[in-house]
Length: 176
Image (cartoon, rainbow, N blue to C red; front, side, top):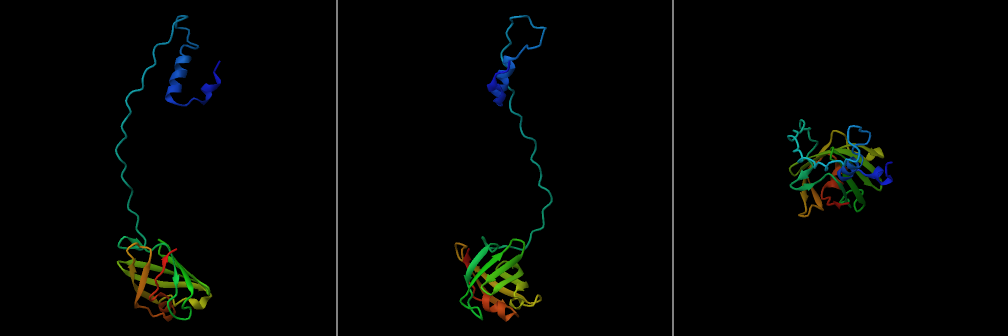
């Protein structure tokens, strides 16, 4: 009869103990009253095989860092100029190269890329539609991070879109 506690036994010790307990069960070749021999110890652990090589490198998305700081995250700050000056702006940049800016008046969506400290941005859509710049208008800004990477400042290089220029030139958001 199998003891109830052996049902829950899963370690090597328990397996060995069970093997010793039931050694010879159903085996008519052993002489009656003969005890099972000592348990055999497990052999040495086997070494792992050779390390697997990584697959082919995946193409990276847009650069996300200037130095050791990452731009791909959520930022919050105050719009420095233009129609919406003084209003809060939550700006979320994804690692995939898209961004969403949320202000009281609505949302603006776009694409971005960073090369060194040069930040390039385009609008793709907005709600309401008048908030977005023309899709062909590319803004170029210089990005400067604080030493602790918790604040970033954008400085205009060029941008044909006056609305975006007003909210990005001098924008200094902090990590959200």
